Length: 369
Image 1: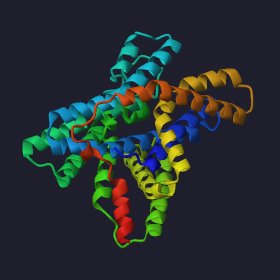
Image 2: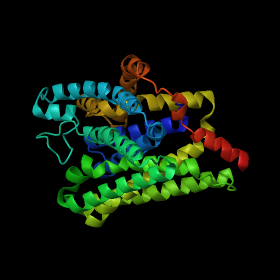
Image 3: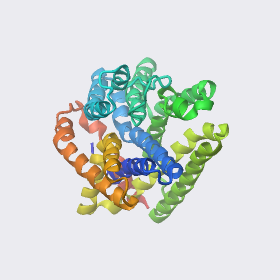
Image 4: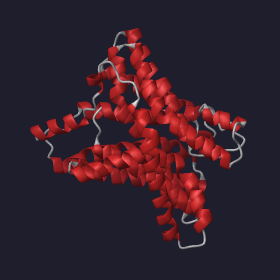
């Protein structure tokens, strides 16, 4: 599958938009604003996952070979589980919770399946990873099974099913979500948030079939930038409103505002991709994407160590030391742990079917405009 440099860059920026605010919260520096930024960074990750995995999911549905679903899961699990287990063991050792019941629930991604089931949520970033893993298991299998049952595999069919999936989770969240404890029992619970990744899948379908022909590239880019600013302000205001007074309306609106922000960010970065075609910028963007997962996994532990050592110095010095440590560790971790595992992942029988086509679509747009 072709890498899209702009999306690698977005993935890296999303990771650091979680890691940096978390350190500022740890240092008690603008905690409310920092927490709001980190919340939205996670939401970008969700939508981006659905977007970049859409070609593989669609290929599995179109091919109707159960083995392709197995390859999809194997590729996802080899990418996500080994680094996660390393980080989980490290955090569990720090929390003196290794092989505890809480550790086992984290290990099997069930600590937040229907609610917060752990006695101690000592590895708080794991909630989003559970959402991701359960999406990998449920959503592709749902589309695959429905396609086999009905004999329909087209874009319209997949779009309808994705919308139905989102609608079902939305209704479940509205009817059964605990608004009094919304943060821990709704926003960070799998059964109430698994739809957030499906928005990225829908965006991929939209961009694959809507060309905006006749619109100049500069207007597309400008429109995408305006859309991102508008959705970012709306999503940020929603998070701050929830933090300020816990308003129920804002809590109900949050999943939609967050998804809109994530979708607009992806669209803008797809439009920006031609600007990253120089060798140096491409290498930097791909590098950011490669370390993004380990940045997300390990930043809390690194932040705790840096703050313990440098908590008395100026915040900018702390932040600089923190970033240096995060970048250094995650670079080494990717090179010697993640990269060999990625190289060993299985491939689809018809690899050409799973090629990512946003670049081809962009070239087509350039040709007709």
